[in-house]
Image 1 (cartoon, rainbow, N blue to C red):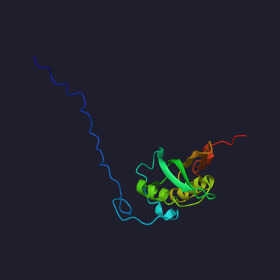
Image 2 (image 1 turned 135 degrees about the vertical axis):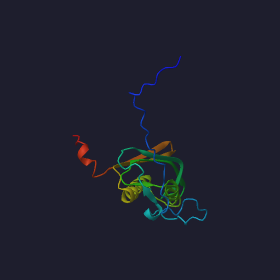
Image 3 (image 1 turned 90 degrees about the horizontal axis):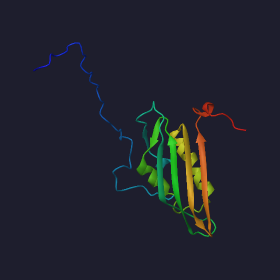
Amino acid sequence: MTMPHNRSKKSPTLRIIKPLFSDTKDLTFLGKTQLPATEIPSINLLETFANPAPGRKYEICFSTSEFTSMCPVTGQPDFATITLRYTPNKRCVESKAYKLYLRSFRNQGVFAEAIVNRMLDDLVTVLDPYSMTVIGDFSARGGIGLRVEASHIGKQNKNSFKKQG
């Protein structure tokens, strides 16, 4: 027995799905084996690309346990886990460029507090994010570990945070 076709039901509407696309035309480090010497930290190393979802607030998080700098007093290596969390505005940092930027701190004899705050300043300059936090979790020396956390709340978000006091 066949069932009569009910013509009153609407057929499902098809949604057109846009293909994914990443604009890489301005990225010069991606896919290259010859990379620039990165002995000095510079915002010029921080290549960016357009935020693929500018109408949505979402968080990007990078973390590496392979960060190295030098103690400014002894010259001994300092090891840290660096975590970057941010809510992008119009731009996102490209991960390979970010790795090169982190590598540029390797031979810098600088205190951890200065490193983390410099990273925050440089990244805020190139990205202008809604919010950003950089955390440096430095390995223990003499039994004492050091964690430095620096944050930025963009102009776009300042009105949404109430003063605490």
